[in-house]
Image (cartoon, rainbow, N blue to C red):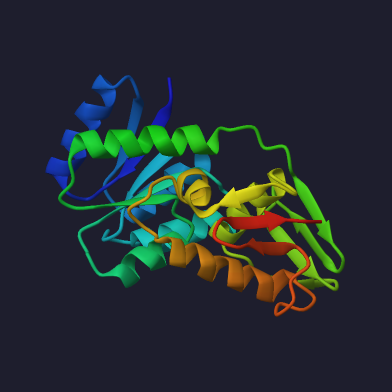
Length: 225
């Protein structure tokens, strides 16, 4: 039975989610504020965290960032009542795996939970990566370039690992949306291109003439070591 932690301060939403997830055969744990939720997430093992963005004591973005900074890779689905794209982007860049905007249907949330669990439980064949002066450890989520720390976001680690697992294969943008982000409503394929450009700036010797992240015209990308 998969263990899910819900961090939500709205009593009605917390109760409704708890009942629905228990009926779906999940083992459910709850916290009504960010500080308690963070403590529970750090002290116990969960298969997934449902995390509200607007929380007392410590907001969802802070909770997510602190978990990722300590190396906690538990999948996180962010709940937000905000519709501005920047809030969604900030949640994803903080390390969330997915987001759902309130109000949402339980059917949609359950589908996203299954998708995130399926995606994050796939076998991880690539644990480390060496690219000339760049060294990446996917388990520890650390990176360095010429011996100096290299800052990658959680999403960049996941994107690069997926590409490395499919070395020398053509990976389409739709594959990346489905396998790395897990849904096709957000982000768009243009966002994928932006992430690739940012990764090139960080890992390529000459980003304008990439050796590793190769564009395949009208198809997607190919990763070459």
